[in-house]
Length: 299
Image (cartoon, rainbow, N blue to C red):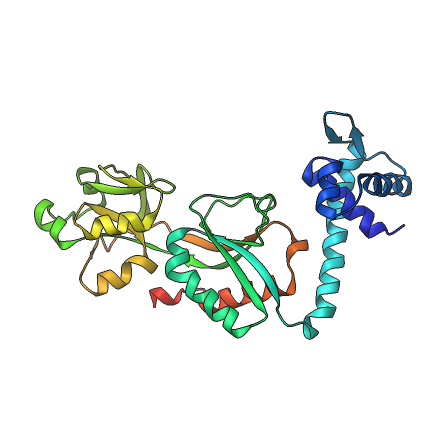
């Protein structure tokens, strides 16, 4: 019996929730999946799964075996990747997802340079302002800006994302310039549905501050709020990669320089170490080098 294959079958059955779904993903017959499971149970001397017509669940022995099987598979993949790495050139298609704003402004030009460096690669980029199921939607890599990641996924930190409070000169002429963070509660603040919808958090002189905010416009995409701010609609909290060029040109004015909004991490997220192909690893290395621990757009 190929014990590594049997472990792979076992882990896939658990992850997919059924033998039929695992058979489809592994391109095996259902009978072959059942055979591998039975032989793994014979080898371990314990039943790993409760099988009924309606549901599948782990036995206590299966619950103990699952993390060990994952570790064995990851070790085997790491060993194989290490032996192949010096000889393999990145190639093939990668499906990547990212938020619309960061994708348009930062990631798209980075990917253009990546595929130019590695002409045997291709990228299918999905701009989505929502979290996706990487397994179900067959995503190789999600680039996420967050401090709250799914613990079931593997994440590599690529850089950081800072934010700045800003508004157009025309808004400030009409409504005045806030001098303290607390004064934001008196202004028309344009809010982002997925971050800081009703509360903006800062640090001032080492002390955390939370300011309730609200306004007449919110959106699920940050660049919409940026365009509204440019039109003088209100005050916005924007990532520096989007706002700094407009602040430098005078189209927007930075507010509250003594207050530091929360800093978020920029991560490359993938479903499993088994998905870390040489091509995906090369893309992660490329993005980490390009962005830098102190991102180039802040320098």
